[in-house]
Length: 122
Image 1: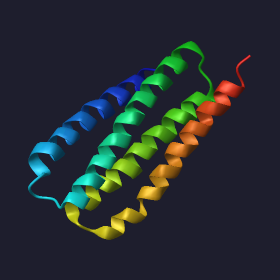
Image 2 (image 1 turned 90 degrees about the vertical axis):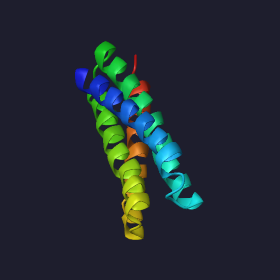
Image 3 (image 1 turned 45 degrees about the horizontal axis):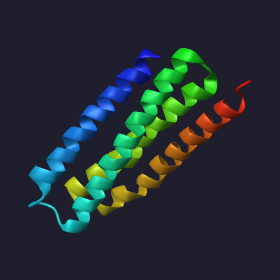
Image 4 (image 1 turned 60 degrees about the vertical axis):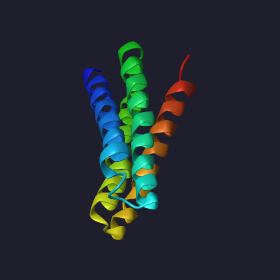
């Protein structure tokens, strides 16, 4: 329970910080396309920071393996999806984009686990 709340807070904090960094510090250094890619990373990170908050609440009130797996997949998705977009835009190494879909699949798996946990509710 505590780990999901902690990861939610860290993800939310860094998502806001990175979004501000992009808006103010990178605006003149990145192309408009790369800035949009970076902002996509922060957008998905923030959405899934909130999802991790939901996982923390669910883990407290109705713990299950599926809820735990949702948290694992959301965390993995933030690292792979958002992280690869940050790395791609800051390094200019386009091949890092090959990692991004794996993060997207992790996000999907997290939402699937959450849906299955809801389905199993009695």
